[in-house]
Length: 147
Image (cartoon, rainbow, N blue to C red; front, top):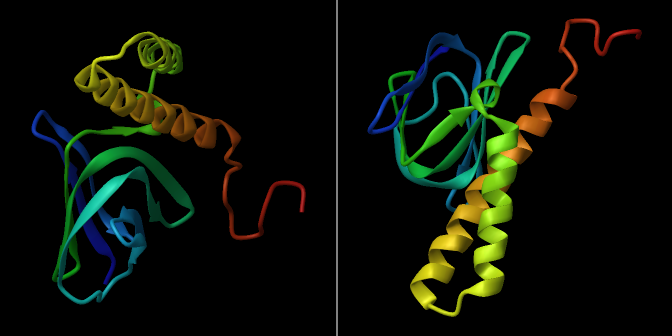
């Protein structure tokens, strides 16, 4: 039986889908893959890229951490923040990256440096997810196009 997946933040539901074949998330001890019939699990996830696979479709999600629970083929991700690849505004993410880098270069206050480092990490993650979406070739049963 395929997975039922819910990715939620405090503000919104980011992804809800039945029939998901695989969830790959950035676990705190490394990449974590959840397949149907997975044992019950509750774990923290760290900032990174989460991949949701349903048939030939893959959805990439930039996630900034949170918790992942697996129970009875239902996967619930309670994320601090999450954005699907198609939701990411690359121009805004690039501007955020530049602002964070400037702050890191100019500031000496520890609190501002920590905040800027976290902002830089988020913007780089968002840019990576957007880039992955642009580069991804459609998956199909016969392999890449032209093969």
